[in-house]
Length: 238
Image (cartoon, rainbow, N blue to C red; front, side, top):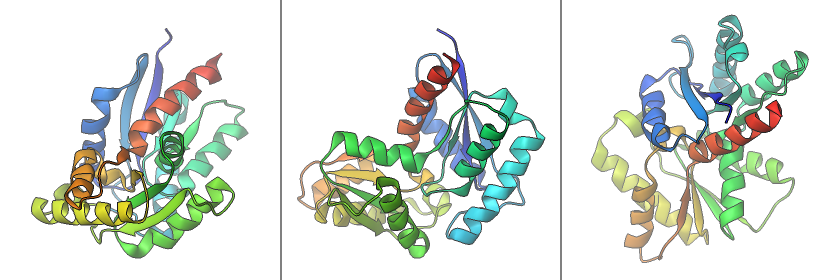
């Protein structure tokens, strides 16, 4: 089997988010794939909390990836921000311009696809309120419609970096209560709506159980993303 080299991109400049992704993804690396990790340059925002910071991080990362020739080095690219992040589209446009079939996808797309394949209705457990409406619009655009299968976005009030570096008791309490609210909206699948939530699947399930709402499936778009990306990279080589 030909090895495919995949670059997992943290588009913000917080190394703790990259470390959390690596801790979560390395043990489930797809067979025949190698994962490498990229953190946005230090001048990029430390967190993505609105459209402005999304665009700032996209520009900083794109310039760095092109300047370092990382696009030539890797076989596929996973943008690890749970949003319709502009870097995904910038990479696709660049790859098309050089007539490359290498795939570039985001954990947002991968998470929604995974959730739709394994459940009836999915909801998103997110961070602060700044991206809520953008996420809702992004899901509707990706699905090309309003759909009863989408149970909405519930925000925790937690910051992106706080998820990795903040007080654990506060994080656990808010993740549990937010997950219970999302399940209470009728979702049987919950998507981790931030790369900083990597590895928090059991915490989400506990919150739903403790609220007396039974069992839910939890989707990590980063884990789904590396699996999908590995397959796309192999197909692109054939």
